[in-house]
Each structure stands twice: as C-alpha cells, then as structure tokens.
Image (spheres, protein in one colour):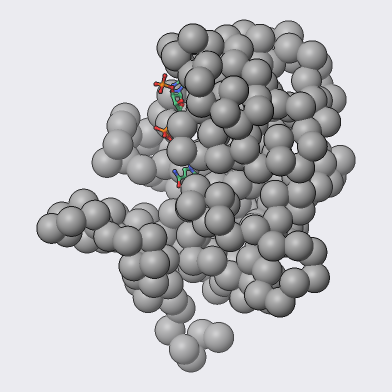
Length: 250
Ligand SMILES: NC(=O)c1ccc[n+]([C@@H]2O[C@H](COP(=O)([O-])OP(=O)(O)OC[C@H]3O[C@@H](n4cnc5c(N)ncnc54)[C@H](OP(=O)(O)O)[C@@H]3O)[C@@H](O)[C@H]2O)c1
C-alpha cells in the first residue's frame, strides 16, 4: 500500500520502519521538512517528504504527532479523497501541552481528532509503546503474540488498519466504534500493558472511564519524578499494576 506518515518521531518513525519492512511504500514527514529527517527516513527505507506531500497520492495516512498539534495539520486534509484511510496514533497527556477542555470533560480523544480533521479516523497503534512496536512483533499464530485495539466507525477503513497492525506483527482486535476508544486511552488496562488478544479483550471490557485520567496522571508523575528514567519493563509492569481492575470485577 502507499502510506504517508505525518510525524517522524519515536512512534511515526517506528510505524514507518515496520510498514516498510512489511513491503509497503512509505513517505515520512516531520515538522521541519524533509532535510531534517532525510538520514532517518533513508535508513528506514522511507521517502522523506513535506507534510503536504505525505497526504498526496496515498491510500493511508498515519498521523503521529503530539495530540494538541492536530489542529495545526487539519488544513492538509482538505483535499484528501474520502476513501483515504486516516489512522490516529495520538494520546492526550495534558502534562505535555495544551489542556483541551472537551477531552478533559470526557470526549474520547480520537473523536476530538476526527472533529479537528473533519473526517473519520481509525484509532490504533496508540496503545503500545514505540519500543513494543519495534521489538514485540511476532508471526501470526506464534504463542504469546501481542495484540492492539483498532477502533473506528468505518468498517472498510478499520479492515485496512487491521491489515497494517497484522503486518507489523500484532493481532488486531476490533475495539468497536470511535466513541468506544476511551477504552484504549492512557490510564486504562489496555494501554501499553503488552497483552495477548484474549487478555486485551478482558482489559477493554474492564476499563472504567472516570478512573483513566487519574491513573494516567499518577503514572506520569511517578515516571517523571523517578531518579532515573524507568526501564521499558518497569513502565509496562507499573501500567499493569496501576490500571488493573479489582479482582472482583473480572
Ligand atoms: N512514543 C511512544 O511510545 C508512543 C506510543 C503510542 C502512541 N504515541 C503517540 O504518537 C504521537 C507521536 O508520539 P512520539 O513519541 O513519536 O512523539 P515525538 O517523538 O515527539 O515525535 C513527534 C513528531 O511529530 C512531528 N510534528 C510535530 N508537530 C508537527 C506538525 N505540526 N506537522 C508535522 N509534524 C509534526 C515532530 O517533528 P519535529 O521533530 O520536526 O518537531 C516529530 O517528528 C503522540 O500523539 C503520542 O502520544 C507515542
């Protein structure tokens, strides 16, 4: 498939690497133009482009920039054909940027993203750490293969997104409508906890909407105030511990 990725950081760069490795044709854009990311893109096997070029002549656009910056790229989507699938990998961390009142009041993050862009989006690749995506993929059917939730309203777009998750080495799990995608946001049991598809189903079902922002903020406070940055394994383990539902809810 022809794929344009806006955002060439930890997540966008890793999605690009995985999708190139799976045989897709990938254009990659950052905020500072193609020269700034040329070396990185070429190492991955992607073509460095401007954000304007990343949305042209592609079948899929992956948006992987800081959540609060999404309104800044909305104009790029004005002439993108409606059949192009847009994947939103973003997560809202008020600590890192502007507070967004509608999201604070409970609007699912990707519903807000979709409104900013003026078109449907599929939320996936948001609920794994970039390192999990980089190193945690396995072949279909392998024991212990990790899973990713895929939420969205358009079944055709969701099928394409599920195909890309599968190509990246993960089991895609249909996580329902975009309105349900709060179940895969930061602070929920499904978020960056490295689960198999069976475990992920339980995790999505056991999420408690009002608990998630408090758990997200407690984890961020813990990680950012640690003497040294916690290891990947510690982050996943603490995410699991803090977001685990009480045993009597299972
Ligand atoms: N890192 C993870 O483990 C992870 C996991 C799941 C989901 N996510 C989500 O994925 C998104 C990206 O995260 P990240 O960790 O990759 O962030 P990051 O490393 O800070 O990279 C952000 C990228 O977005 C680009 N960017 C920012 N504003 C832009 C704009 N207006 N137009 C075009 N490009 C722009 C940046 O370009 P410049 O460098 O030129 O500024 C950079 O390439 C976030 O929403 C995050 O919550 C991250």
